[in-house]
Image 1: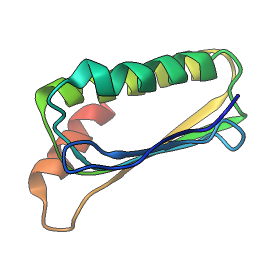
Image 2: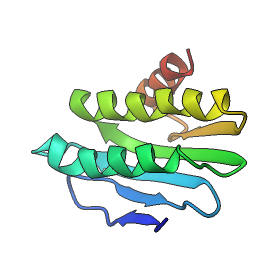
Image 3: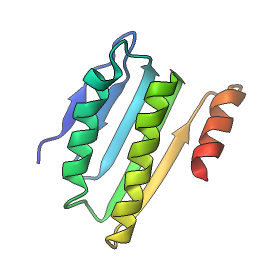
Length: 113
């Protein structure tokens, strides 16, 4: 399975999903004009990955801002980690945010539930 690499733009985040190591990274801003055009390839790649994941899958999410449509897709990816865990593999999430960004801290805390 190939890696998924999408370079960041002013409206979309950097995506680097590594099928060999299980490291997934989302970084930047996510406010795409056409959310499905951006997120559907990401979600489809991840659906393929969870068929045969690595022993440990690690998500690093470092977003400075995202809109509600992106939030739904990110939450979907995080829910899919449950499928990985149910299949006997480990999953970890690193939620990164600026020290003084209370909004992103709270969102990460909400997603943890």
